[in-house]
Length: 355
Ligand code: KG4
Ligand code: ZN
Image (cartoon, rainbow, N blue to C red; front, top):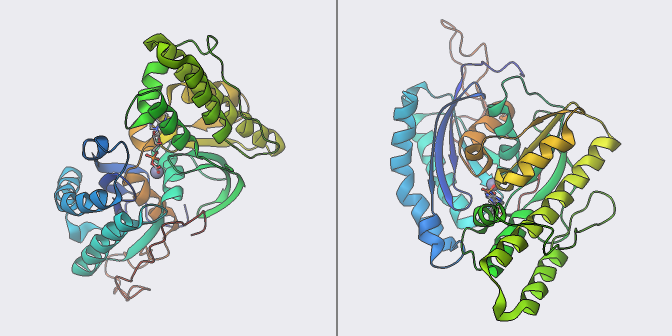
């Protein structure tokens, strides 16, 4: 665990898209609080996330959520060792709000501050789920904007081995849900009606690209044409059947590549995370496919979708600004922090897997 004190306290702040969240995590593993406010109601009437509204709402909600997170964790600002905030990828206005608030708090409390890669956070949600989970691991991160297969040889190092050529899995679910008239947010709604559908009644093609690449745009077009062909006669059962077929095609495609990656380079730990990892069929099928070959960790639903605990966990294991022993040993004079206190964080809306 890189010599970091296991009792160190990290405050996490997450505002990259439409969830505002503040969390306190102890030792990178134990969630003391993880307060999440979803903006679903705010964006529902627009059928998608409106960036300006999202950013303003983050700013309005953060102070209250911060109080709640500290109170629930029974922690005072003085007890904290590190403030961690998502610096990308995400919506630029939303990221700026979180980073601005993080910088203000770190300066006011004289605490070190670190910027965290949101994608790393999704993987680190698994560390919160299983106390003994350590890299090396193979990860599949499936969210609204990403479908990435990554190898993580050690803390803070990620190599992308597969990604999507076009839509991300979550984006595909959201668009399919809109076509099926299920509204926003689409992924959970599609998951819900797929449970009453039969994927064999109106099957859709399973995307199949060579190697470890994904593509979901053809599947989306196939659904569109299928619906057009059915005209006005689409019943609720048809919708459920098509949802189930679409879900099966996405899930089997995601797992086919995970299976291939595992075969190409066996590894003992597999993590499937990100918002789409909340999907019922994906959870069930991932367990079946990985069984007997590696240990699979899928975070519980509240740690799959965006949250600040995963950001705090990622910061704990990877931040260069976290104070380390001997600075915290009683009686030893505190040396100045390496970064001299709060340092500006570079917001990057299109950050990949780099630090
Ligand atoms: O990780 P996340 O909360 O935000 C991003 O970082 O993008 O992922 C959000 C995505 C959305 O596309 C949402 O529709 C999808 O995750 N999602 C689901 C389910 N729950 C959330 N997709 C399928 N089934 C679900 N149960
Ligand atoms: Zn996310």
